[in-house]
Length: 474
Image (tube, rainbow, N blue to C red; front, side):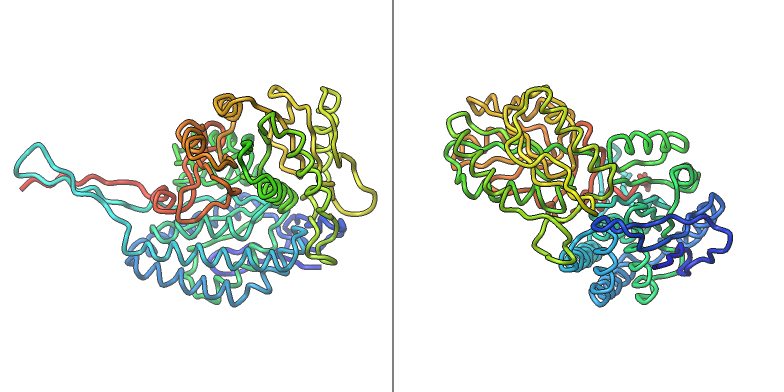
């Protein structure tokens, strides 16, 4: 069994006298590790270390910081096998998928390193002829990074790479479900010779996380998580008026038009819904199919869903893996049962399998209504509710009749319909004839309760900066 220690100032900390957090493999429910639970003092010390390191880090040129990130990306690739094997154990992913996630994390690290020469301010015309207005982009200071369980390696680098290139330092809290991969990344940080104190990683309970987020030297809190977690972060940010960047829940609508390639749409929607067992913020969560093709398309969906086998991915990588824990499985199953009680028809799936592991079968619910919980609340599992529409205007209205606005998509061959949805959908991302993929040169920002701020691209990088206006009279 692995024993993991918190990582502060480029050193793994002593564990004597500390509480521990147990980490389990979700495919067989065996304990695979125990990690040190940081105390409030540990967190205060880590923030102080990060603040001290930031004074030196920010004085490096952005080009020098970029070179450090490139070295880190190289080490991530070099250690992708080790990191991937750890991630697979704690998440239930296949080793191949976990290694690929690490490679993708290295890619986004290199991408942000390339912003080194592009962190630009502005020269603004003044109303006075003998005066210049210069708008500088400056780092915020110490950033608290709260990492989710579903893509913990990629999301960790997705947050720390833009924070570091802009001159900030970070204190990271990985998910207590998947913390071991973060400490495997810490080893790569040491070998990449990133300056001490620039990245610090600690596991902790919620009370200690509050201590971290409300520290007066924490200038920004970035979270990928639930709406409830986002509300807590907003409470924390009020203490010191810290900046918040929140990527929260999603309920991606997929509109399927009668002129769509139905086989392609069914295949890709099922792939979205069953990838990582549906534990993805942009996974398709509700399908609006035109009433004229309802029977044909739901049968295609049923065939695709029933072709997906589930089980331990350590035994067969092509299987759909487990949910993160038993609570997640029970919550999803109870949502399915309530939907059936409310009039939904169970087409396939919808039961708790026997045996070890937090598995749940691919599930389809038809005869759903817009007001049902299964349509209004995030499922975060392999369950698809199906609804119908008559006109594209009705489809847009139904897709927008929601608390969330993260991603959305349509399958159609009609340019007119695609552009009508593109110009009226209430979501931060819209995909035409494909499932969401979060290109890291784009900007991943949610509308409504799906978040504040965003990740990726130029705008995601600039979210980690603040401005200083210099008014220069001459």
